Image (tube, rainbow over all chains, first blue to last red; front, side, top):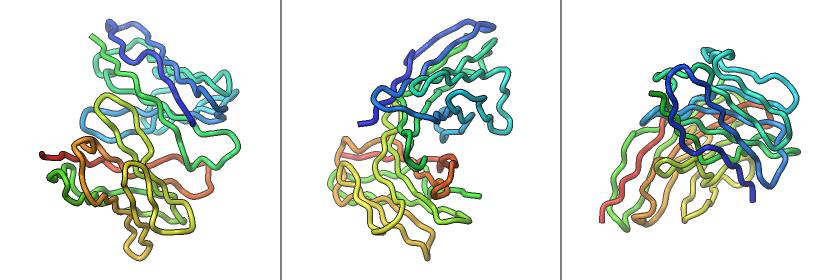
Length: 117
Length: 114
């Protein structure tokens, strides 16, 4: 299989604090990981594409200084929401593309629900 | 550029009835097409995908979809709905063979009545 995990699954934090979300591909190596944000009753919006060992590519309108992405290894990418505010509350989902194949299949993590008070 | 339109944000069927979820796409290159299912508070699970070859694609849980280039459609069907099929379904497109990203439709919530 191709399993992707996220940690934590749920986090509540105070406004102004930073939160780190981990995305791991458990049984395969992924050169590319994607971070999505999903608003209630809305579709997934791509935030950024993360390549191992290089800087992430952010979509238009996504603040790179607020949403820090690090892809330190072929199995781990992290998203840090810095100085979180209530409007950052959302469901964050990562996905990973298997190394060596076209990126036509992304394997999704279970998501992290962030609530900023 | 690619885009996806899912007709109907909410579809309700009776248990045992046919499920039809509509998806139309636009793409300037031959597309790869996907259907994902999302259960409440969970991530996305791949149901099926079309890349090349046979246009009728069978997926998990008895779902299938047919790629119709002339209609730019990739509708998802299942002959007989189960209560466990109640979920949100997303159609997505990516540019074939590229390093491109998935473009998702807005999703269709499927309800199944007993």
